[in-house]
Amino acid sequence: MAVAIRTIVAQTTAEAVRTQLVKVMLLEAAGEITAFADFPPGHWKNFWPTSCRSSPTPPP
Image (tube, rainbow, N blue to C red; front, top):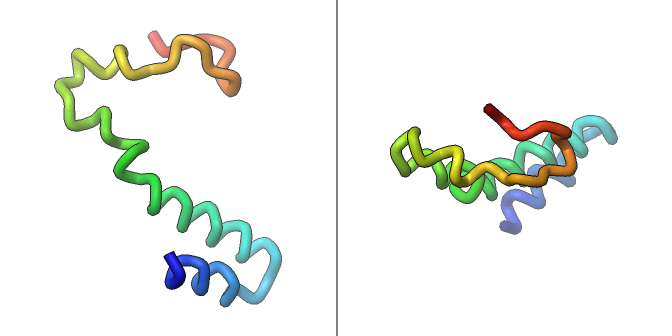
């Protein structure tokens, strides 16, 4: 984790800091974000939230 933080603070602009933060956080969470992909595609819809604040309608 220390290496990840160093890549964030090593940036030279505020925009670069924020961009690197997003990259690092997504890489750190990649296993959790994509865990559903280990199951057959027919089961994926079972992992979709039924109530998602960022999306007014659930996926089909």
